[in-house]
Amino acid sequence: MTESIESEIVRRHKATATTVGGLMVATVLLAIVAYVSKSFLRQQHNPSLDIVLRISILIFGLGSIALRRTRFATMRLQDIGALSGASGLLRTLEKTTIQVALIGAAISAMGFIATLLTGNDFYTYGATLVAVFVMLYCFPTLSSWRQTLQQFAQVPGDPAAPKPGQ
Image 1: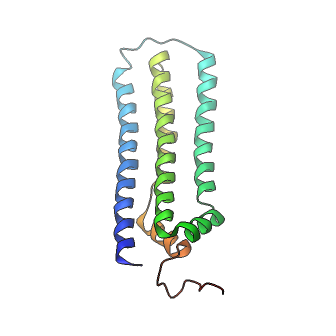
Image 2 (image 1 turned 90 degrees about the horizontal axis):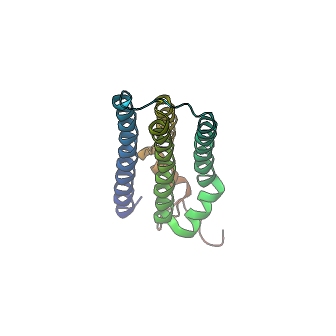
Image 3 (image 1 turned 135 degrees about the vertical axis):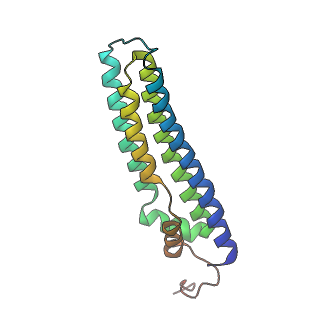
């Protein structure tokens, strides 16, 4: 890999990992706030909210996994690498990772809002568990990004890259 691509991958990875880590910390902080504030909240049983929240968390959690798998499909990454090169591939890795992490943060926020509405702190704890799993699932590793670039990016001057017409 060229030096400019290497510096771009390090820069983008650091920004993405910091963003995902920050969202994970915010998710855990919401659970701590729910724990601390449970004595101030009034318990209100709401069965319809319970069903809606559980289904929403399930759909968001499974949807985040499906989104990541769809966006990182082999054929799609090959097309992006061929059309946009390493920079486009890095942009896709960064954007998709942040989108999946934001879905995890939304799951956590839904649980916290349900806790505020009902006074049941279980909603925040359950949502936090799912959100942390989603964020760990999408957490970027530098080695996997490098491997993806080596496998799918058309780097100029790369002797392993196929020549036009071959």
